[in-house]
Length: 203
Image (cartoon, rainbow, N blue to C red; front, side, top):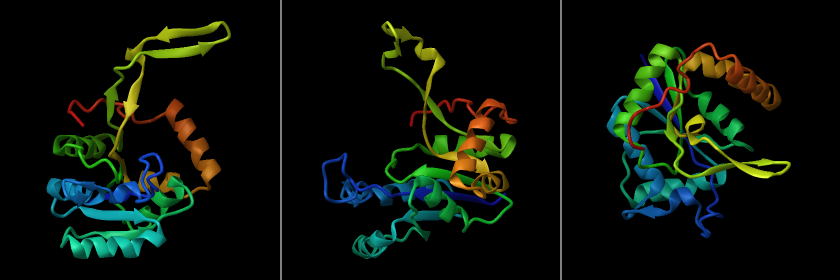
């Protein structure tokens, strides 16, 4: 089954206190975005990698690739106004049938085991989202103040989130508002019970 990944990188680096967009900040002497692409290439030499970047950053990315002799083959799609539009632009380059992952460009340390298990489970269940346990204390705001809630009832959502291509194209073939309504409906009446199956591996 053909496999693809859409790597979304549209950050501006504001939270990092940098003028340089966060996906270009160096990690071990190389832009973090390159580390992310390398992680997926190590998973599968035939994986179709689609990088979504704001159009105004694409020339700089090409320059970085030349400077670092970066040879991981990938396609580039234009970033959109929102993450929804960015993923939709990347998804336009993916052909069905197959599996497609969506991953954050500034998450370079995802393990090969997590990537592998996400794609394997998606082949069975059509939609997989990796999660990790919440370790911090959580409190819920109430009219009287706040109260501690059980951490076991919550998970932190990670990436890559892997889907059947046709299923994801169906979701993104709508307007943003209808898409959000669909996601809300699916979260309540999801036909694939393992969407929240925990991937037992360190991310």
